[in-house]
Length: 76
Image 1 (cartoon, rainbow, N blue to C red):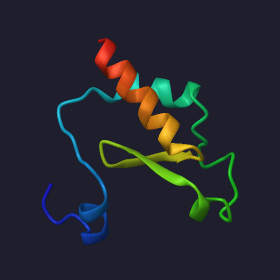
Image 2 (cartoon, rainbow, N blue to C red):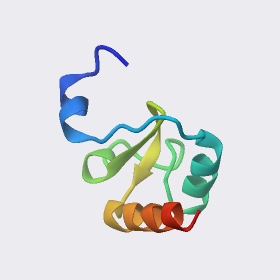
Image 3 (cartoon, helix red, strand yellow):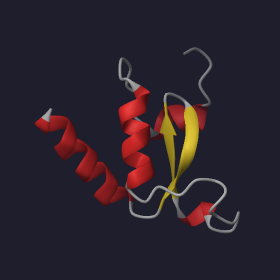
């Protein structure tokens, strides 16, 4: 996509060609907090989770989440 925000472009890895539904289902089961469950004061201390450019929630333990997603990706 053209015109990415500079901060986002410098701080994340963006991948293409993935179906969103399996990832969204996993994130719902794996303690990703959606916006109805959190207070605004929690957001700065948490990691924002984006799927295909959409902010789907936050997670409080991003290292473990990334490790688990990578393990699952390698098993498929």
